[in-house]
Amino acid sequence: MVSQDLYAQLHGVVVKRRGKAVLGPLDLDLLGGGFTIVLGPNGAGKTTLLKVLHGVDRLTSGSVSWTVPAKTVRQGQAYVFQRPIMLRRSVRANLAYPLQLLGLPKAEISARVAHWAARIGLSAELDVPAPRLSGGEQQKLALARALIRRPDTVFLDEPCSNLDGRSTREIEEILRDASAAGARIIMSTHDLGQARRLADRVLFLNKGQLEEQGPADRFFAAPKSPGAIAFLNGDIIE
Image (cartoon, rainbow, N blue to C red; front, side, top):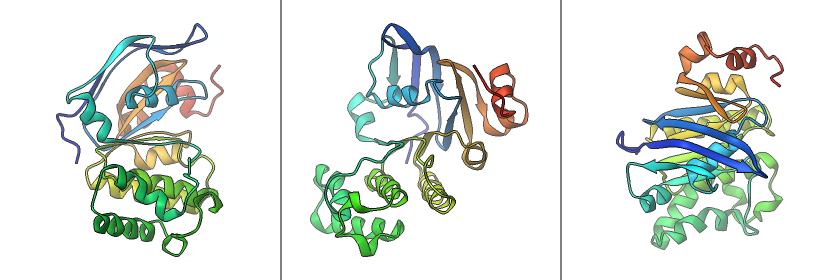
C-alpha cells in the first residue's frame, strides 16, 4: 500500500533529444495515491514524463526526488508499456519471473501465479508460449506480471490503446482492484472516456509543458488552460 508520505518532487526537469526539448522545464509535486491520469495530444511528452518518474529516462537538467531512498522507490515500482513485452517463455514463466527475482519460496510463487492466471482468464494457457497470445491477452499478462509483485506504484503508458472494448473493461477492472488494494496508478491515455472513468487527478501536458493539473472532477468540468479546453473539445492542437 502506498504511504501518503511517499511522493515525488520534480524541479526544473528538462529532457532534450537532438537538442530539442521534449519535456520541460517542468516542476511537479506528485502526491498521494489513487489514479493520476496523464493527458495531452501526441508529442506532448506523456511517455517521457512516465519514464522520468520511473527513472529510466535521462534528464538533461533538473532533478527528481522521492521521499524514500532510491532503491526502495525502484523496488516498489512497475511499468507497463503500450506494446506489451513478452518473455519468449510460457505464460507461467512470464508470471513467475518477477517473483523469482525477489527470491520468494516456490510455493508462494506457484500460488500467486495460479491466482493471477485465473484473474486474467489464462489458467488454461499457463503452458502456452506468451508470444502466441492475442494482443489483449498479452496486455493483460503484462499487467498481471507487473502487479504480481504487489508494487506501490504502477506506471502505464496507453495500456488500452490497441484493445477492444471487452479487453479494455477487463484491464480497467484489474486496475481498480489494484488501486483499491493501495497501489498508486499513474497512467497516460488518449481515451477521454477512460480518463473520466478512472481519474482522481489529471496532469495535462502540451508541447512538453505541464499546462494544467488538478482534481479530475474540476479539470473535466472547468478546464482553465486554452490547451486543455481545446483538447477536451476535440480540437486539433498544433
